[in-house]
Length: 423
Image (cartoon, rainbow, N blue to C red; front, side, top):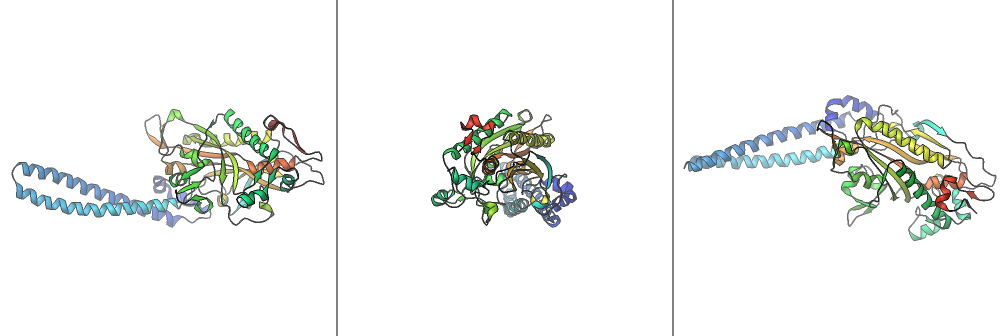
């Protein structure tokens, strides 16, 4: 959620920033400022009434003690009128606060100055590429056919049990999944991230805190009776560990990692580009989350990018990094880098990680603050990244490493899988 103080002081710059998202937000920000001014005036008027009511109450007490009952009763009538006025103002204040909150919740984050304007993924900037595209045999197959050939994944069985987008991993396919999860977690903890295991369902406050509500309500599965949501990413429960928390400056940074299944409805997606593992309703992902002092957060973001680059290098996968344009960024992000691996069998790039700095957008919703060295409470910056999402990593590993003898396993994973080839 955008900070009111920044809207008051930097409205023009925020309007220009939001234009990168193709959003004309001047009128929306004006409405926020109008509601904020109404809230502050109503609060001031209410405070004055309550102060006057308290003053009269003391005076009434003194009059009764002095035996001046008639004068005291006159003042009591005034206090009754003040209480009625206070009730009206209190109700008006509550309504204005709700309207202001609703208006702020509809506004996305302002992109970082380095973000370019754009309309879609076609306008994203490629800023880095590494690795050679593998040369595959003529008989090369896409991963969904390899999964069937080697009995690794059963998409039809998952469809029977649940529905499309819920695959069943079998044999070496299941073990390769488990190996990747262990490998990612070990790489993250070796880099200083503390591993946590978190719930796979969250309440509405948690979904609101990280920005899934109200923006992505239709993309989440909801347990309606209990008013809980299946998580779309571990970012949600991990970041919410810090909701309503006041940290001390010496406790920063906080760096956490966790594995969870993720659940996304992904409605309306059809075609070859979403076949197999390319788009699922349930998938596994290992996440990294950081809470940083504002002045350190962009250096931390670059560190997260370097960390994921190192993991992909160990997996020997060709990849590239894109800096997303304003029109393709998530609602909560100020700056996002996407990692994509190249699928030689499909002849296309597959997104496998997004690494983002949210600045104070999430922490303002979460009321996540830290006390600095001068004793001032400040909003922290939050960051998160996939490290990594498994489905498309697995797809690229199967496709790029297929040979006439079988599918080879990268050396970095062999100690986790217990086998070096799938035959």
